[in-house]
Image 1 (tube, rainbow, N blue to C red):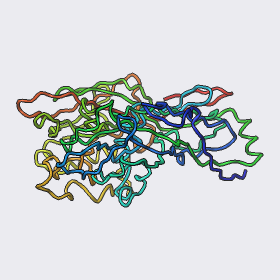
Image 2 (image 1 turned 90 degrees about the horizontal axis):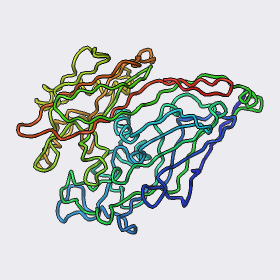
Image 3 (image 1 turned 180 degrees about the vertical axis):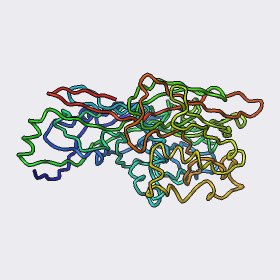
Image 4 (image 1 turned 180 degrees about the horizontal axis):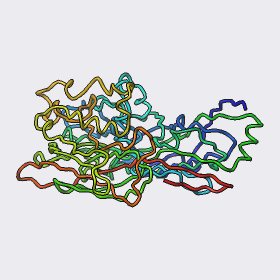
Length: 456
């Protein structure tokens, strides 16, 4: 069987007036890829378009003409999106179905998942001089992201779902695909930089600024068999397909000794990755809803100071697994040095850290950023977690269960437990923090005589 390459481009089926937004537009983007005798290369799929922010008056755009750390004069109409996740922060839910209605994968809080996946997956090479990060609509270096968002800019983002990122997809066998993207609220995607510059309190009037996506297209590369191969694809009705995907969970941390017990009900669990953010920051123009920080305590009236994370423990049915010890951080954090072992654990949840190609995460670590007397103390070198040029912490909670067989651990009927112990400054009470957890697991689709069954 011989094949040829083909480039396929699909417009949204719900195109409407061509504008997608949580305001003044459609809040869902739906692509329907037909059932044809072709093999889709899902890892080449990109959703492209133009991103634009409009002020609450529905006419003007942000100015963003003041420098990032400038205090006087006060910034006017300055709005930003997250520098690490970029336009990925616009996607709240990603669902992949077939044209008959069967669901292959659904990831809720997809933007929060990307807030962990993207920095953990990419090395410093991805961020220097543009790199892959430029297509996401972010620049990673939060201080220099002036292009967000005083003018419209183009983007082309992949969809980070294992169903697409795995093996070739037989579009005939899967009965075509329907990709449904549900957009996040504008007050999640946009922030006005108040946390780093308290003078930035403008632009929230008239209902607040909002974003718009336009000229949206989905494109991918396909492998097209010859006539004989296409005929064989049509006749074939039985197959098995395996892929990795994520299930989403949400929890609220309200104490310094927080215990979680979740019935995740996944049969082949590969890893768990999660991140934390103060609950009041989510869907709040004043703060970046995509930040991934360790729990914070009050600095005056604002949550700015990191609470010391003493240790974390992962259990399966009450037994410590996969680690039979606590991940201790209290000594390194009290000494103000890099929390290297905890960093290794969180990276290993996503990447095979012992692989030679992954030894280099970044040439820039906590210790390579110099101290500065002109910046607030929270941006000093003692950040205890992965960071990039913006010096804002990238803190994750995660552990890997099976990098060797890649078959995973059975959690059906057995709860996943996580214990997080922290130290709160004297005289303060714990503010609620949102914990977003994502369980990476292997799914199997069985195609038999025209029927579709999905097993996890």
